[in-house]
Length: 379
Image (cartoon, rainbow, N blue to C red; front, top):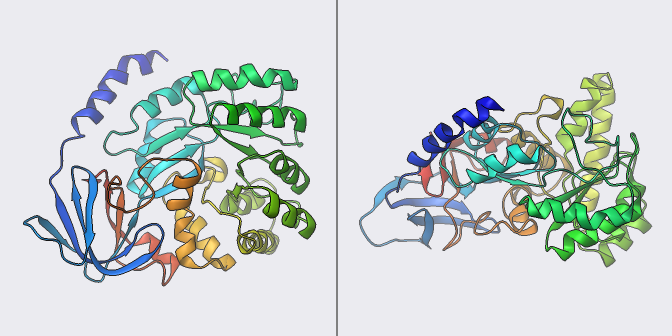
């Protein structure tokens, strides 16, 4: 802690002086995925860190980048991470992941990392702060003190404390492999989160718990259930009566099979097959899917491993243009991230330039040649 206090001003100064004003520039004749649709052979003008024009021909004298044969898209969002140090935010940014949504961590340290949100060279971090869990429950085992809940009446003050600390969304844990909060407590936290206009998301691992928390109006799940297929009756009921999204964390689920459960290659492949089948099923039902990888669990990194999640979505049979939405426009919309997730006039110029088109093959997502955060090139 002494180290943090001593060097914090130096770190903040470094990122402040690197956030200089950039020149205007045009990316010319590029294939553009704007977060929603594909536009061929167009040009994009960036001025003062924002998108100012998108059209075939842009008049004026500007620095020009030749986009012929290249692919321009919004920067990526990882919708499920656990961030404990600034180098993770740098790692994310260097992979084109310019927004990360933290789903449980140490609130005092997170405050520093959100304070540098708009500085150059780092991903913007949005945080849940401490997750809602029971005494001794999942989330309490990581070496830092976590405020817990024991009854529904605790929810009002617990949520108020998170809001006072500056969180962006609320995370709830319903995980029966350890002591867990009841569904009554989870419902009370959801209601309090909504009273404060906060998105409420829930960690689950069982389909029965998923059905219950979504029926209690949780906004989304930060994992997909891992105990088999949800009944068609349950799924139909949720789709008809609830507005929700799912962050499946497929890569995490697959990785832990060998890392923690010692499953062999064939067993891991079967788990992957079953979870991808369920992801495609909920996609076909109209449920919005968001890309998240849950690093650093299972040794997943904060940067390039999100490409693997997108490749898995494509493998599941989700059309590649919709796969791109899972890490761009959908998380920006569902988590109310202002002026990002799209390449549209007036939006922040968070952009990736690729040599190859990922809509043709999702493995091309790794062909990034340039990353801009608010119009500034990240080296």
